[in-house]
Image 1 (cartoon, one colour):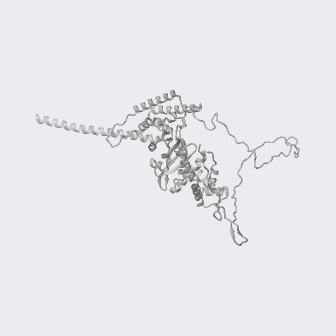
Image 2 (cartoon, rainbow, N blue to C red):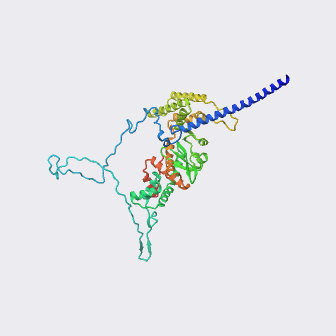
Image 3 (spheres, rainbow, N blue to C red):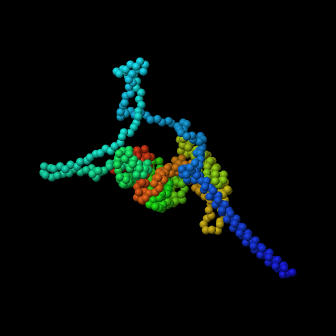
Length: 480
């Protein structure tokens, strides 16, 4: 009897041990299922990302491009073409045309009589602007040698910029540089364009030499722009990757409504920013996309809300986070309120209005945290990952004053679009050329873009700015 009872007890203990093992396996499997489910959700979300929910360029949307989102205060979706209420524009006739052609009637439309010698009683004017055929204008410099009555022969000196038996002048250099640096035309096509449009036959190697010469001539202007931005009250900052000499580099931009500076570094973060030398000297308001490296500098921060809107849109569409839509509405409402205040000539929002916006902000943050509680510690090294929603919530909560800086200081923009626009041409160059073959070539290109984009902002004709540089007197930007 005892033996059977002992055997039964042993069997039950074995079963209990097996059940414990299986229970432990179930816990592990449930954790794996949860982890894989989260991974599947993340991968599905990535497949659905587009330019409206991420920093992907609109060109990547293809035929999936969504209609433009309506913004409060804009009156709904924008229609194509000229907008209602927008000012029209037309081209005025010039007061002093270069040539006049009289169109005289030969005979009377009624009786057929010849009209030669009859009185002119009215003139209707129409003008046609056209480009005359282009051709090189060759200037020959002759250095005379003159024998004095004392017998000494003295030879005249050529102008300093006339250094070869045959050479091209600053105008041709400026055109070649304009085509390459402004219009992003590859060297071979610059050569063909000069030949087809102007009859200028240059070698393929002459073009990069001319471009490099102008890039070196404008370097002092670029230093001046960097110094001016370092002392500015407000500036936009951004960075983008680029392939240079077979490896990844980073193009850093600092800019405002008057100036643009582009620089190159091997590093993206704090090290690269210090190499460029603007942020270490900057003490104003820096508008940026929230990269952690900017927090290493003693500056006032203003975060880009265009980035926030895209991230919040992704949480609404892909992760089913209702609080994100409330935050979108809040940001757009605050933006519209700021626009109305500026239109009325106010330099701040009413205190009651500010208080209402801040209360809404706090309620949304609280709702977001309730829907996304902190993850449980996993036992692994490091902090557990917060996920897309948790990471964005943490940023919006901890840096709320930087997020809403545009609302408390009406001089601060809602987003960092200025910085992104100023770096866009670099992305276009990379799309066309794929990379820069040499470090010095990349640096020279960025110097030219710094000079040209600043000239564009200040209303300077880009070809005239390049010609002045080619003549040895680069244009100097104004600072106000």
